[in-house]
Image (tube, rainbow, N blue to C red; front, side):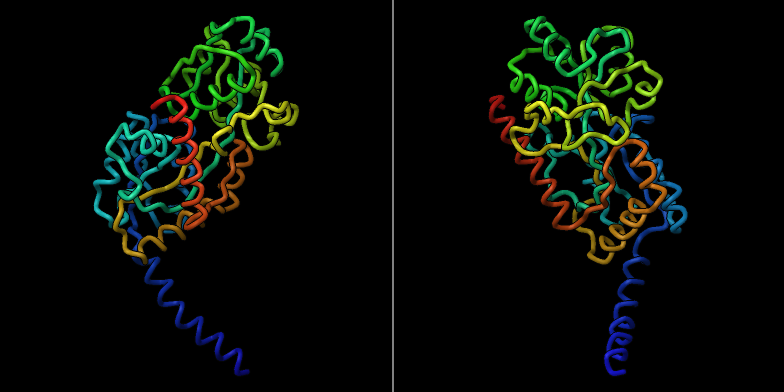
Length: 318
């Protein structure tokens, strides 16, 4: 009886704190996405909207593409820390901070929750003679530096660095072609204008399913359940992460200086949505991990990517 009384008393003390954290979260939240509408990152945001609505919050998604997400995230950094303006950060922000090319710093943000972590897949067009990873490596060797491979983002972003690592590990050379998004890459591959593209699975599953694109390798830690016959590069002894594990991820951030109860309430809101059966079903269908990590685990994941970018840039002389 005494133990039950103590537990009830502890619960009573915790309840007001929980309510205070939830009450501080604004009913209307603007989420800035630094990429164009229709892409994988935008889709993540749109899938959160009904889940936030069900939890009593209106989520307004605003697309501000440009600068590798720097435009949107600069606005987040400059916003009041009242929880009304948040953003989606990713490997793009981490690379920008690591390179020092824009005046953005980690201490300008409050990190909240990881929404997704994505492997990458190497894909070719339907008419390409490349059918396997070995075919791709052979084609790159035959081209002797003339093989065109693409990813979303300029030189120095994650797709470029991963393709560089792949070429170094296989003793091949290639021409990097940068695109603003995976939709353009898919169109160029289907038109026969590119040798291969490195993309998120969610960006091209439609074209893969209807046969317009052919996946030949997974640049991730394991085969994808949706593509069980497509091997990983690691299975062939090809290390595409020589500077540390660097998988693309998207995580929610707010401005620095948020009050702890507000931050706790936002973390709870995002985690509840990300870990919901509805969102997990989307993650399973589109082959991304939605683990909803926060706190020290998220900080460690960000640091791991940051250290990887710094090491890669040192090799490039940046």
